[in-house]
Length: 199
Image (tube, rainbow, N blue to C red; front, side, top):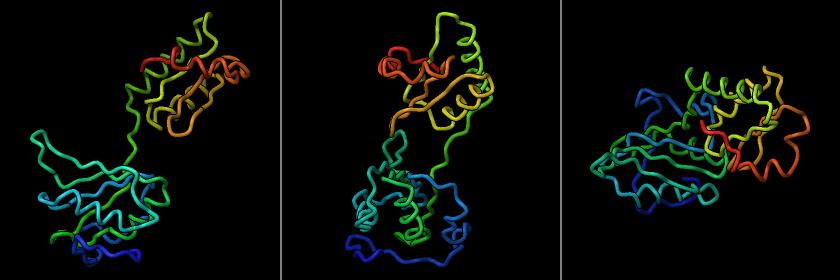
C-alpha cells in the first residue's frame, strides 16, 4: 500500500460496495483531519492496525485512539488523527473497503457535532447579557469549544453588531468585543484564560 510493505497484516482490496457503502467516495464526504475506521475484527491487536496505518510513510497518523467498552473489550472502531486534511484524505482513499481479517473495513471522516438548540440559545443569552453589562467591553470564550460552537458565536455576535475574532492555531478561542478595537490589544488576549466565559 502506498509503496510500503505491510508485513504484519494480510490485506486485500474488496469489491467496492461490498459493505453497502460503495467505493471511497471521499469527494462526497465532509473532510477533516480525523478518520473513523470501523468494522475491524474485535480480536485485532493494536499493533496490527498501527502497522497498516504507519505503512504510509509520509502520511502517518499523529494519534490513534482505539474504542473499548466499559470492560476494556475492543469494539472494532478506531479514531485516527492526522496532521492535515490532505493526509487523512490520502489514507482514506487507500484503505477504504480493504479486507482485514475477513472483514471489509469502513472508513469515514469524523463528523463534527452540530450545535443543539439549547446550546444556541445559551450562547445567545450569554452574548446578550454581555451587551447589557456596562462593566464589560470584551468577552473571551475558552479553548475547549468545538468549531461548530465557535461558528455559532461568530454568527450571533455578527447579528448583534459585536466585534468577534478567533485566535490561536490548534487551541483556538474566540473574543467578542463591544468596540472594534478593544479585542485587538495584547492585554485582552493574554488575560483570556482569566476572563474565559463558562458554557
